Image 1: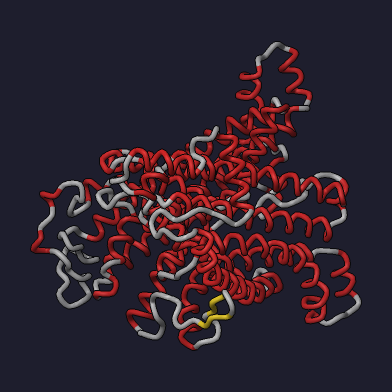
Image 2: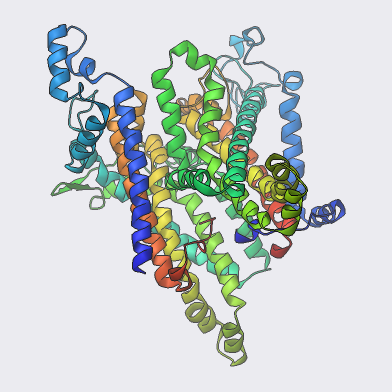
Length: 307
Length: 330
């Protein structure tokens, strides 16, 4: 990934578009992602039942298997849970929460990483050393363990009401903090290359302040690699949320996400109600595969050397 | 080389220092050891006495040094929940995790290497493309989902393999092994395979990328021009140079397997360090949490340092300057 730190002329949109149309993988991933995102955004309108609104649930319809199995009923294609919630609706709402957490966590990582990377690359000195040492220390530690630690300790310290109230921010914080060093390294590398160039020196001589130089001249050089890393990182964050919630250190059962759905469904796996866990698990797989395929394609498309 | 070793060791010490401070802060700020040892009915005099006996009235630099000294002597404190020494708990759980991660590493190399070689040699062929696409799925499925799907297929539906536990284990000194009994081996298959799936995909992609790079080299073209058989070129000339980065990466992989063992152990109720960590987190058993934190940090620092030094041994260009040549994605 050394090439990511090198300066690269900005791609014309047409070139990116042509690369896009050439790649079937990108098309499939993009269509899949668009469908998923639309379904998730429209969840309140297309879902049969709403897990946040108990009035829409009917216990008479609880524990129905998928329609193609004896006992299954329309319109509950993928069956229902123990409270009569439609599986498809649960998955849509769950994916909504998972994607929200994933995007917010990545936004947090990008923000922390970019600011610290810019500071450490532009100023260097002891501040830069401390920042990069901190990143090194964190790199030696697996992100999932760190996220678990933050999530688990928050559970131990907060009261149950505070836990329920701050569940989403806590998971975002745990995942966001556990991945900032990736972005800090990326940004710092690019800034180190650009800093010594003539146009930056010229900007400095023209009296531009450090803030303006960073924002107007250094930041545009790292937008592409940040976009690639952020896309792939959303896949990581979605998997991270699901893992934390499954292990019981993420979101509570009252906040349906793909992870909490799998966690509560797992209890029924051995009693034969497999659809409660298998369908959310498959939904998680499809979502992460789509994000990863799109991110892979974006990386190749924005990096002509790999084409 | 000596300077490099010194630099890496200095860095390792910094990491361990930071983590030890973190573990120390954790153990002082969260939970009250006096209350958890004596219970709520203790008299104030008893509490005061225990505070003094535990050294809790000392200034914090002294307490930090005592903490480090205790850790170095292997005294990791007493678990709040089980009231047993943490060191004993960890030693008891260590073999299970090592066997799980070790077998998973064998799986991931044993399956990932041949797949990667095949995909590199047959680049452009539909089967190689299919493997590449499948590998994306492999890295996209979280370990716990693979584990659940495996349990659904092999335990619930087919009833072939046990869904939890370690089976029957054999005691070898202080080490307990499940590798010597049929039930132990049966119990090991699914957790190790679930843990290995994403690593298989990573190994295959890495081997493919490295091997394609090597196959472009001049000496391979000369070998082809000389009319050597493709078999010889691929398996004896190209593979040898592909393996160097793979060997070092597998060190890092062992670290990741160790980390994700937490997840596999939770699903399969595998009695290893990961399960201990999760149980401790769930009950805020701080001495256990900070001890495992320190152990994990020491393990990762050791792996990273060894891998970095191996890189330097393999690639002489890295010996003079810093270690900037190490690929960030590894």
